[in-house]
Image (cartoon, rainbow over all chains, first blue to last red; front, side, top):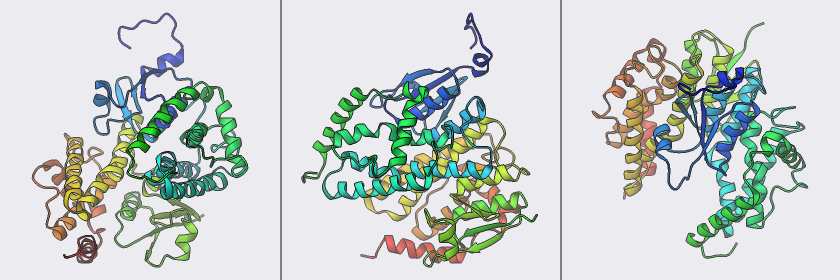
Length: 243
Length: 220
């Protein structure tokens, strides 16, 4: 902040310091961070990374993983989206707390974020997108089982995973909010309203929230970009069977 | 009202051991239940239906799974001898390295132990690179958390025991002279009173990991 004079400073802005987010336009991990900051009215500078041509800044701020997202607060970098979300919650507890107060309930949120971020739980959805044949069929089944777990055991009767308001787990589940584009490209629907009415309702509610609505990847850009991505994967795939 | 704390673990689990250390550090009395994972108890299946894995901490009948989640829960519930710092930035750094241990370092070490040929070489190279980051993180510090042990020390604790067992069984050197800070840390950590007598019996560990090693490297 040294040397930068702004004509109007609100208490929040002073408290914020300088906040930067290194992300990528379609990454749900980066979006989680942006959503969290948005819900807490924390202003930040967003820097979009080209992951095929990583900036010096990214390599400097995340030398261990060289990945987005990275939050940089007053020059200090924090990497790993789950770690960043906890940092944001502790640094700006109000407005819009993202974690419950009770330690046991907090442990449940952390457990499920850890669960859904595990690469074995992400893999079926990736294979759903770029797999073919038997491998694809298996992925569809595994994905549906996971969705059933999220629908019945994690969301249950609640409006949001966080209860009445969006919480940390909702942000981590945010990838579901634009999963429809993936289904459109693959031409297979798995997250349908009939099988998953609660998740479907959750998606509508989540997407409608002004902070989320204004920070979703553009549908057409996703469609085009991801269609190309899928075609590239299929072209290089060792499988010759058709889906 | 009496607090009831149970810990479901196994005799050898590095993840269960972390929780033991945290409970010991804070002086929390608990009942330890050692599971036979080839014959999981009804209690385990009831308390961790999602993963059916240990460790599971059960506090007043409420189960919590996943060692890192358990450690945070313990720290938030029992405030004496904190294992996480107050400052959000330092806390974030601890959480970052905790994830690094389990998501990067451990898989690369496991790969170096179980894989063969080119895959093994790649795993060893990844291990070397990962250990370099860990070594760097110890610069100017006695423990990862500073003067006293904290979350990261507990989470990296497996290094202080398992590495030497892997080296004995496989005949390969993993943490050698290239990591003086890490070697010193492993020694200091192991000698702490709260850690000292908690390692699983070494001879049993050698037998267990020799059997695993033989399984992954069948004699040709």
